[in-house]
Image (cartoon, rainbow, N blue to C red; front, top):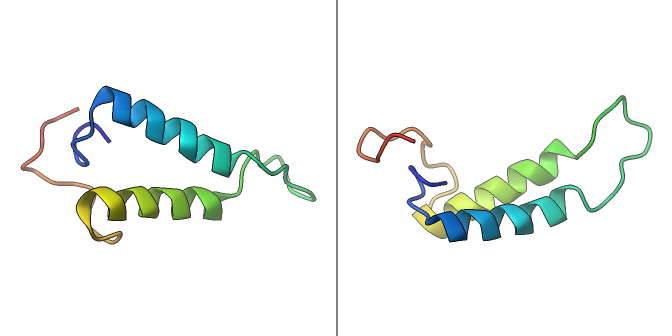
Length: 68
């Protein structure tokens, strides 16, 4: 988030808190040790990337951004 999405530390914290509410909100039933639904995590990350970059399928590696 800091490098590729060029978010501030405050933006990263806020985004993480919102994402974690969605991903960890519902307990999983009949799982084998999973703590979250990976589909919800993927949706949340794609949504954040789409919001910041405009394309949810944009490569997350970019040599033009700072190393973090």
